[in-house]
Amino acid sequence: MTIEAVIFDIGNVLIEWQPERHYDAVIGEARRKAMFEAVDLHAMNDLVDQGHDFRKTIEACAAQYPEFKDEILMWYFDWIKMATPAIPGSVKILRALRAKGVPVFALTNFGVESFEYAETQYPFLMEFDRRYVSGRMGCVKPHSIIFEMVEADCKIVPERLLFTDDRQDNIATAASRGWQTHVFEGPDGWAARLISEGLLTAEDLA
Image 1 (cartoon, rainbow, N blue to C red):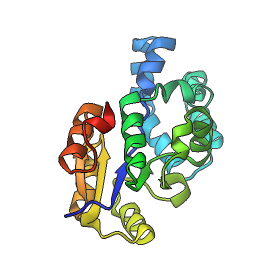
Image 2: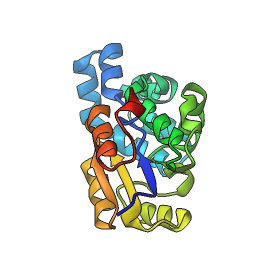
Image 3: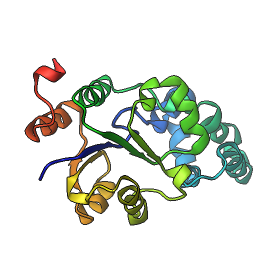
């Protein structure tokens, strides 16, 4: 079936998202492991992705764990250092699709304020035809409702959407709704899939 739109996740597809790596570099692996065992920082971030205030959410968590207060606050003050660098091969694919006239959407778990900040650092985030940002939508992947909202907005039948994400749970929900899917493990595999679908050629990416 003809693909009418290609949908990208952002974290670890277009931009590396590695908080643990940043903490290891700044406070050391042992301290980072102790903190992550004591504090569910990814659950904290999930609240931000659902639309909760970025700074207030992190400050509230830091207040609950005074022994890790300074380190938790880094999630706010050092956030862009955790969401780096861009993945050039994926950006190239995004731009190649657009050059071919293929509609390209983003579907991402991202906070409202953090996404606005990311736009200032990564201009390619402004290049999508449609951007579905969880913080603005009030729900997150892998819950089915966010995929339903995308379908309702773009008015493309699920079977004509091709979605890539690095997380298997997100892929599973999309596939359960009938979307075409690709587990992202790197730009080369993603490029090969798009070529196999007839959306790009090797020359488009040369």
